[in-house]
Image (cartoon, rainbow, N blue to C red; front, side):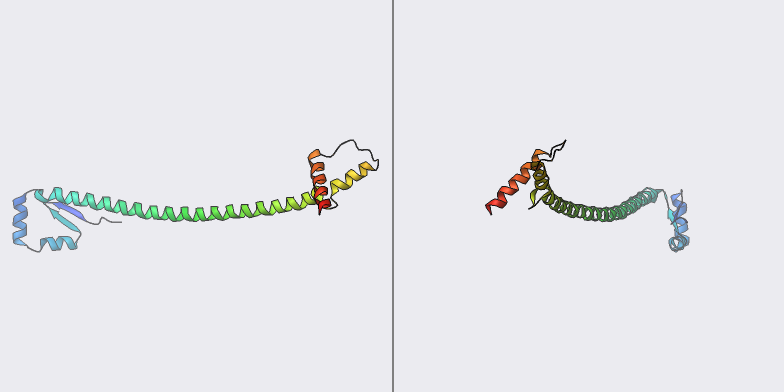
Length: 148
């Protein structure tokens, strides 16, 4: 966890020129040690370059995070669609089970509603009556069966 580089500011431009004249490899030696030598004439450009690099690094980091978030969101969406499809299948199964039960209760041949009403017709007394809609269903089914 160290700095990538350090700026060495030479405030006197002429002193910087003398140092370069006496050792032409001074830049190379400094770079090898992660030091960037700057003078008053290069300081602003160097700082703007560093700022631009930081912006690019932040944008790259955001891009990676966006990609990770998109991947997680896609996986969650796939799971949601799978669950929704499963709900649809269970609803279809429930509807089929309902239709089978309703057939046995009121619409199928020899259904329970018809048989219970037959008991009532034979003289048994009941305190409650079967819902008229179920009776109508059962009667409608009898008409359809008789027509066949």
